[in-house]
Amino acid sequence: MFELIEKTMLTGLGALSLSQKKAQELADELKERLNLSEEEGKKLADKMRQTAKDNQQKLESVAQEEVKKAFERLGIVTEEEFTALKKKVEVIEKKIKSLEG
Image 1: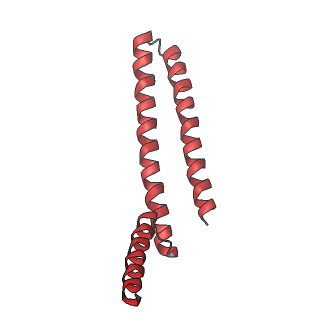
Image 2 (image 1 turned 90 degrees about the horizontal axis):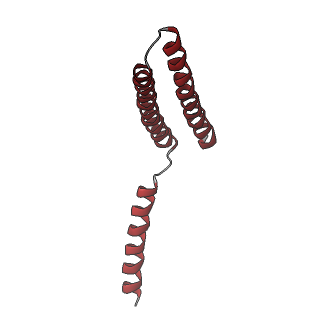
Image 3 (image 1 turned 90 degrees about the vertical axis):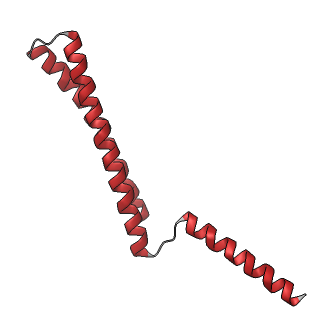
């Protein structure tokens, strides 16, 4: 299950990387077709790159939230929860040993 989620996230991120490349190609093509100056073409490409980056960040957030929800549904604890439980067990073990001694 985890592998499927991981592959889905990586596929999405790969698609976004490809989208950034395509955005640059589109900006270059528009620059030529619309006779944009070098500066205008650069601004357009930068804006498209920023939009792609913003979309990538949104996708990452959504993917992380979905993974978190899937883990909760499956009953998988987080590393933080595991560490907290481990510390509690250590405290209990020390108390038991002190009572036995």
